[in-house]
Length: 199
Image 1 (cartoon, one colour):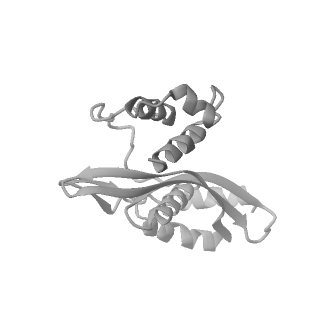
Image 2 (spheres, one colour):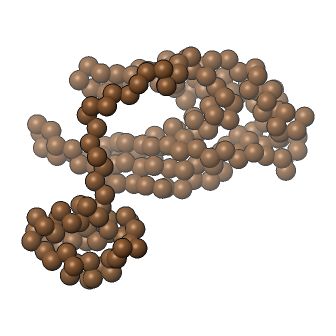
Image 3 (cartoon, one colour):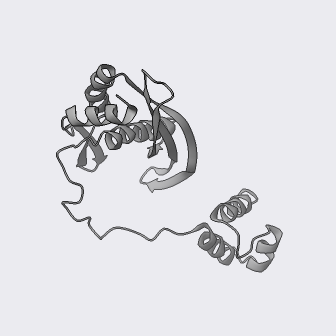
């Protein structure tokens, strides 16, 4: 069997993986999710049977930030990280045959676990999408609530607001940081960060 036949055979034998994880969102709210363990427990015996080995072959941080949240006790920092992972599925009988799947994962944590959470999420969904694993639920079955969402403010907009608030000359700041209409969000982010550090 070639790698595609093996992936197809595994896909056909895999059953639905239930959402057994209850994720607490605080304030009495929670949602159900698929545990990485349940996905691995379903996949590993079939990969062994069909002699397929899967693993993350490449990772890249595509976004990261420190989010600040105010509560009754003051401010708390949360690390946000978004990873792009390439997951490889290798035919162990012909190692030159493999299929790569790109997957993405986000991680949020007040400590040091954001990278691990992002990796776990990306790896779990790479397996789920590669093998077309169903969870028994359709995320499109219910509409998303439209309330409570705020427009994401770009770093360019944040810089303009910061200059206005601090009574700084935006044109002068833009020139000193080499900002122009071709500047990226990352350029504006660096300028804003440097300005805040210099306060």
